[in-house]
Length: 117
Image 1 (cartoon, helix red, strand yellow):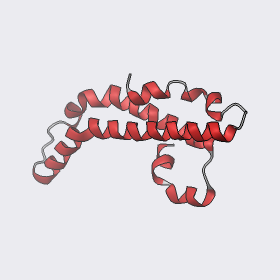
Image 2: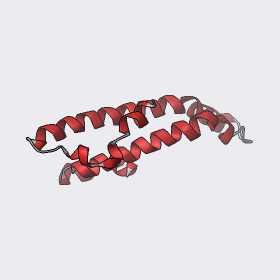
Image 3: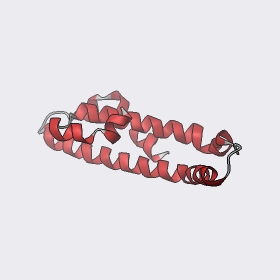
């Protein structure tokens, strides 16, 4: 689901977006962020260890480790912004009906997962 959200732009340029699919992709990204924050960020240095390699590989690994938390936060912020904008579009398109996001249970904790509260 995350791959569809982040990498398949040209597919949507021709076929258009379906709100329910976008909501599910956002929910998958939010679950990823929440799990990564809880399970990866605290011990990422230890998981990747020192390894025997040095030189450029070590530099790249250290850069990835040092920037992982901030990159994850940036991703979470972008997904949250997308979610907020999508909800606004959903409300406008509902025109008196119940917006779609209210009927998708996976979206109940989306803010908490993305903001990290």
